[in-house]
Length: 406
Image 1 (spheres, rainbow, N blue to C red):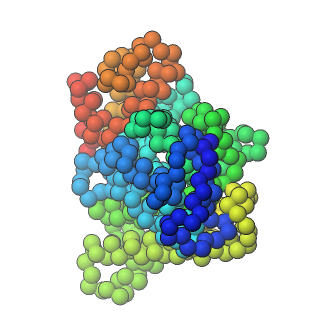
Image 2 (cartoon, rainbow, N blue to C red):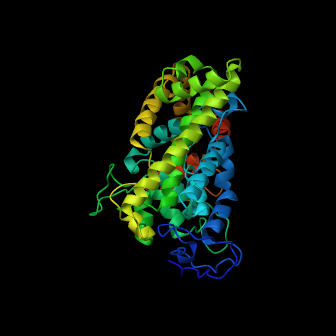
Image 3 (cartoon, rainbow, N blue to C red):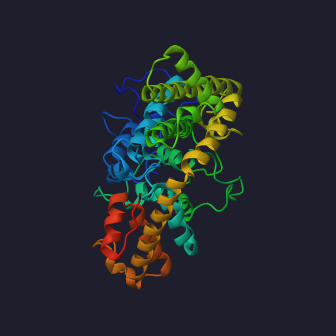
């Protein structure tokens, strides 16, 4: 790792933070040492590099739930990531830790998603099964440590250790103390990078990354309701059958009895976000007070997450997820589009793997003679980076018939 920066005394507008916050002045540095910025902390610099990356821009045309061309008002990976970042910053501010680090992890967390959301990931994972599978979180790490090619002195974005740790472990430890994967084998790209730069896979990430992780849950639970109502797959009456949204619907209708359905839906969504954020703040403050961590290392070494829902909210959130899976994510119309999207991704993988010359210059060189594992991973890298629109365009170029994703 590069040397950590000494930022004390520089006018970054620091204010006193809690003992468990990740201190940018004590960053563990970067894999490739760089001079520190005189105007930005390491985590502010990471956030800026993430925003200016090609991978960030591509999120604009990647599916969240609904395929991008179904309507201009549905969320994409880009708008979702921005919404997650806003919630993560709010949580980090309330818990008095580093907002910039929380924002950076939130903005980068979906970089590795394929076209067509989890559908594309499932299809690519199936195709990559002989070579270790495909995992979007591991792919995010590959992008920021290898695939982005913007800088003269290194591949990737050369992000700080803390941002990479948060990216990889924002959902919790990946191994036990002996290095055994907790949810199956650790994806190969993560294992490969961890040999270069130990991310302490058996420990939790800092509070900031935990803020980003739970912000992700809050954002998609609320905004998938918004998109579901817009699509007509969900109705206000259906929300009245789910404990969390039922109470919010009752409150809104009681206060605004003549409000139209569209505004009623928006009121429910924004109140749901506020309710969940406030619940996390109260529950997390209580858990942190009980743990009384004196450093971020105490947070990493804890036996459980520090940023959490209350037990009551966790139960309500599980019920909401079950409702969304049954009525939105697994609805016949969404499943029909998923099947067509899976075919597009599978067809493209087969075509590029069979003939790498079908890939653009800069991707195909030497792959016809490369070992199968290298060829397959390169094809997966190229395919995972595609937007929905580019994947469809490529399928139309290579095949006589392309499924209509409607």
